[in-house]
Length: 428
Length: 171
Ligand code: FES
Ligand SMILES: [Fe+2]
Image (cartoon, rainbow over all chains, first blue to last red; front, top):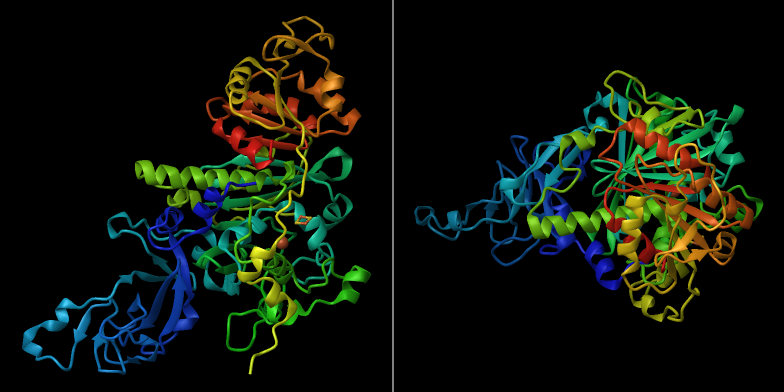
């Protein structure tokens, strides 16, 4: 349970809000690089943290992320002409460069210098690892560029997708660190999904659906360890990483690529779910890439031409009651990503946390909220840099390991939980 | 023409949220918070000052055996005022037992509480504080004593986490 004020505090991320200020401390994924593939390509509308923005790539390849609306009379620059190093409003011809600076107002004499007085709000937009990242905070506090492992590995080793989720970011994130749902909601997929099946450890998951949990604070967020029985009295540990505010990394299975998410607020009732998959030491195979593109694993199939999932609330997520009854899927919804999204969206745009009844296995979620509230408070009161900004906090991995019973995962898996360049992730 | 909305699209709108039933959907849970060592007892005493609906605060500290001493189950669980409490009785009436421990301390007593909880089928959570200020080896020792008895184990950096956790659990 959260008090209403706490729930509002964590779920509202627009300009001027405390959690909005928290999100504006980080580089966040804004677009896939493929959305702005060519110089002078069509601009793309993107809403982030309740701000309507427009992204474009100018004639020289410079990336701009600016206020969507023309400073003259408020037309959407999505209709703009992307030409000769700038975006021209089709209404009266005002033109802006990639920093939002107005460079031409045709009605005014050039000598007047009037256009110098007009500038749209803009944010840096930088390509890294196939993703265009932005930082929406005060320029003097801009941190170094993100160094998540999936961004740094050669491009043939990683795959990234995004989808619109019609819920507040926090309930989506909470799903990402809720390890106890896997044995129920996704049980049908462990042995069938091409990006999960075949791992030796899947049998541990299926045999033991009441794991024991350990939640440990890390410098950047949390380790969430789930322990199940393995053979000979050993334990099978799955360790999820959460790095503040919205990065999660799911424990790997066998030699499959390892994956995780970013949950980025679009506004208070919608978020982008970013889903990455990468292998630290080898290129992804053609089969893996095909499966990812087809929406397997944590990815989805789309409505053509959009980032909206094909199964969505308008078609009741294509729920299949026969599959639910037979147990082929636990909820009747197909695919891991949509199993999660359908339930998180079903809570309503912003779930009312006054009504929930958390239990002790929810300590991962309770701790994440506690850390977020603490970070927001420290930021508001003392201007403290929040956890996760430091690139050292980003050099983490999830892990799946079998350990003797007397070894805490924190000790035994210390190395496995950090990035080791050129060494594969720890996985069974 | 208005498009036909699916059942899910209609039901998940913000407007529909106000029709959710507002009656309580749970009854208070009885939570016993037990300090396992001296530093934790001080923490638990501070916690007990806050207003709680259904949490009671106990200490098992008096039981920490001195070197060479055998452990005895009689008369070692107490409330914070120093009155002896009956372990089985306390646990029998609990929905959740939260054990509070400090990294590096000897918390052997966890096994007695844990045993009683598993006998009575009561859920256990262990919270470990002060883990950052000690060596890994010292922490491991405390953890090894807790691990067999805690279905959820949390290593927290701030004492305030316990209050937040209890509030989240409607204590
Ligand atoms: S069982 Fe967890 S939300 Fe219903
Ligand atoms: Fe899930």
